Structures are given as structure tokens and as C-alpha cells.
Image (tube, rainbow, N blue to C red):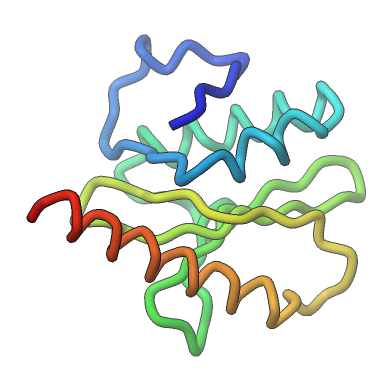
Amino acid sequence: MQIVNLYVNFELVKEVRKLEFYRSLFAKFYGELPAKVQYKYDYVLVIVRQAERIPIKFFKKLKDTNGIFEIRVEYASNTYRKFCCYDGNNVIVLFNSIHKKSAKTPPKEIKKAEKLKKAYFNEKENRSK
């Protein structure tokens, strides 16, 4: 697992849920973002980790998917999405990200997230054997 240098020290935050960064997908995406967008991402990830109920503004289940959610980040007139899923009740596994350029989320990105989810759970099952 790759470590991402976030602006927030998560160890100081009371966690309701944990985030697991699957592969290095987030680190690559995050590293290419402008500093102000990274700061906003950090803010949203803190909310996702510590809020008892995550506001829909920041976290939403995608319709017609097999348990895929999106973490929603908006900065200025730009919209970013981080696809993820739950692993149990208090772990959120983060997958692919996009800089959203239209109102509709690209179906190929949702399919990619579903494939990554399947791969994650397959790898997890193989580790436990």
C-alpha cells in the first residue's frame, strides 16, 4: 500500500471508519492535483472518516451498481469523484478517481470501479486462505 502525504494528520481525528487505499490509484491521481484541490480532498476525507452520517454532498451510493459509492469533491468550478465501496461496516476501500467534466458520470469509470472492487475482494479472500 502506498502512503499519500495528506495535509491532515489523520491520527488526531476520531475515526468512525477507516479508509483503505487500494493499489496506488489514489496516490497517482492525488499527486497530480493542484495544492488547493488536495487540501479540499483532505477536508472531505476527514469528514468521511469522522462523521457519524456522511452528508450526501460528499458521499453518495451510485444507482444501478453493486455497492459502489462516490466521494464527491468540488473546488471552484471543478468536480472530482473518488469511487469506493464498503468492506464491512467501518472500512471504505478507495478505488479509481476522475475529474468530472460532464453532468453524467462516465459508465466506463463505474465499470472500472466494479472490476477493482471484485479484484480487491478476490485478493482479500486469497490472503485469508
